[in-house]
Length: 236
View 1 (tube, rainbow, N blue to C red):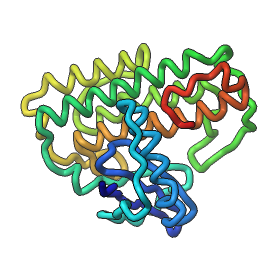
View 2: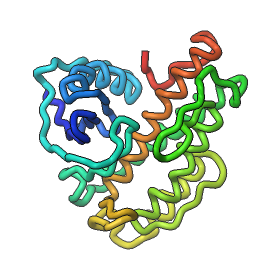
View 3: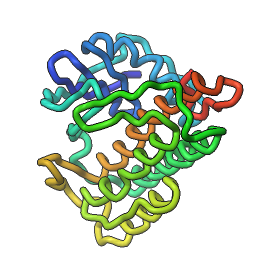
View 4: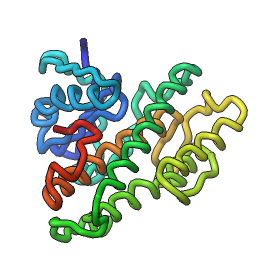
């Protein structure tokens, strides 16, 4: 099957997003590098999603949208709105993507809780334009959890960051679903001139979890070993 992708880039630095596997992505110093990583990313993602393993061919990768960006793409900064995210969701689409976003939060929480010491890390400190890069399981968890109020707020829904990553995300969806016609809220002009929609919010949760779950897992096996840190997201 075709893997339809959006290519967001700053110069050659690239992020490639699979639009028909919401949250799956690759990065690379070039578009070609990102494309080359996509088959294994889809295999990993589908195994995590439902236990199946789909391994597409490179010839199956098709770029359907391009976004040139001034953001720091190499650090996974992103503001793209997919063309496919501008339309309303059906009730069935919403329920499926919501279930996946909650599975992602549940699995992220389980990965975090598996760390015997959430403040231990072999990683050395590193800074980006936006500040210190999270190094420990605790820092990665708090960073990932604490986008909740921001993401929901970008589509006009009041939410908070209290409790667990799963709990605050569930409450956010409950607040969203109380709004009239919530499946078709349109496109929002959010913070910093970034455009948002309900479809984008769902994709951003799954994508953002996946970025930091991968970083947490890689750090964890280097710090504690594969026998201690479970591969919940099927990265290996």
